[in-house]
Amino acid sequence: MAELSRLRACVVHCMAPADALDAVVVERAVACRVAPDELLLVGVDREADQVLAAAVAWLTPRDEHCVVLDATDGWTGWTIHGADAMQAFARVSMLPLPEQGFVQGHVGHVPARVLTEPGTVHVLVEAMYGGWLRELMLARCPELVEVEAVAS
Figure 1 (cartoon, helix red, strand yellow):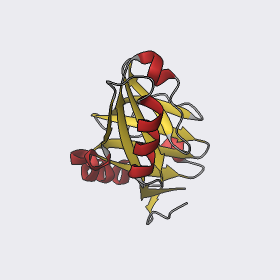
Figure 2 (spheres, rainbow, N blue to C red):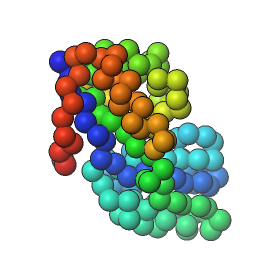
Figure 3 (cartoon, rainbow, N blue to C red):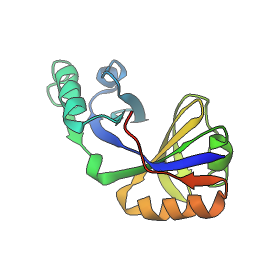
Figure 4 (cartoon, one colour):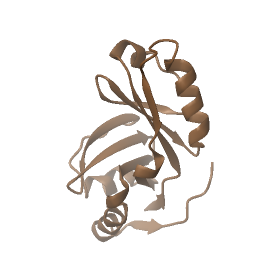
C-alpha cells in the first residue's frame, strides 16, 4: 500500500554558467540539474523566499549575470510514499528511478521532474498538468490512498 499526497515544495530556477551551478549549496533544498546552464532548487516543505535568498547569495558573487527566479507557482506536485511507492510510480512512467536522487522525463506523457528517497517518490509537473496527473495516478494505481499533505 502507498499514500498519495500533494507535494508541498518550492521551486527556484537558477540560470548561470555550469561551473557556478556545479557548486550551488542551499540547505534543505535539492539541486536538480535540468540543463548545463540551468538548475532547479526544490525545497520540500520550505518557503521559496528562504531558498531564493540563499541561491542569490550563493550565485551572485560567482556570476553577476546569473538569473534566479521563484518558479513555485508554475509547478505542482504529488508525493507517493510507502513500501509500494516505486511500483505505483512504474504504472505511470517508464523512467528508471534511483533509490535516492533526481531524474527528469515523461510521467503520464507530460514532462516531469522526479525526486526519490527510500520509500518516497516526489513528482513535479508544470502546474497546468497537476490535476490530470493526480487523476491518472489514482486511476492506474489502485493501491494508492490519497491523504492530506502533512508538513515535516
